[in-house]
Length: 394
Image (cartoon, rainbow, N blue to C red; front, side, top):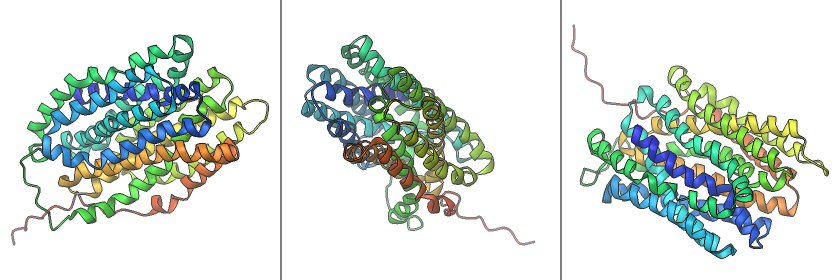
C-alpha cells in the first residue's frame, strides 16, 4: 500500500492542480464559459476512453510499463500548457493528460483490490481514497490563488509532480507481481462460465450510475465555483471545505461499511446530494453576492456525499464481480466517475450559459435524486459465491 499511496499522491497532485486552473487559463486566452467547460470535458472524455482499454493494456504489457507511461502522459503536458493559452492548445494538452489520468485511476483502484482481502477492502479503499483526496484538498482550491498571486507558470511547473511518482509505481508493480500473479501478462484469461464478462458488466451498471450522478454534481461545483463566486477567498474556502469533508467521508466510511455493510450508508447519501445542490443553487441565486453561510454548508454536504459515495460504490463494484473481473470493475467504476465529472463540466456549463448557475445546479441535483431507486435496490454478491466443499456425512 505504501508505494500505491505515494504514486497516487504524486499523480493526483498534477491532476488536481490543473482541474480549476486549466479552465481559467483558457479564459485568459479569450474562451467563453462554455469553452472553459470544454477543457475538463475533453480531459475526462479521453480519460474515459482510455479507462476502457487499461485492463487489456495491463494484460498485454504488465503493470510497470503501463503505470510509468501513464504518469509521464499526465505530468509532461501540464508544463507544455505554459506555452500557449489558446483554447485549442489547452484542449489538445488536456486530451493527452486525460490518457495519463485514465491509466492512473484504473490501475490505482484495481491495485487496492489486488493487494487487500475482501474483509478489509472498505478500509483499504478509504486509505487509497485519502491519498486521492489530500492533493484535491490542498491543491484544488489553492490552484487559482497560486496562479493569481505567483503566476500561472508556477502552477504549470508543479503540475509535473506525476513524474516524481514513477519510482513508486515501479515498486508497486513489483509488489503486484508477487501478490497478484494472476493479473499479469501471460496468465490464463479464459472465460469463466460462472461469471461471464457480460454478466459482470450488468452487475457493475448500478454502482456506476450512482457514482456518475454524484460526480456530475461534484464536477459542476469544482469547475464553476471560481467563476460563480465573486470572492476568491470564499470560493477557495468552499472548495477546501468540500475537499476536507470528501476526504474524511471517503476515508472513514470504508471501515463502517466493512463492519455494517455498504447498503445502509448508500441510501441516505443520494437524496442528501440533491439537497446540497439545491442549497448551493440558492446560495448563488442573489444578484448582488453569494450567501456565504448557505454556500459553505452546501459545500460541506456535497463533499460528504461526494466522498462517501465514491468509497461505497467502489466497494459494491468489487463485491459484485469475481476476482478475475476486478480490473474490469475498476475500469467501469472510473468511467462512471469521470463521465459524471465531464458531464458536470460541459453540460452544466452550457445550461448555466443559457439560463443561470442556479438553474444548472438544480438540474444536477435533480439528476442525483433520480438515482434513488438504484440505491434502494439490493445488489447480488458475486465475489462470495465460491464453490462449496461438500460436508462429510455423519
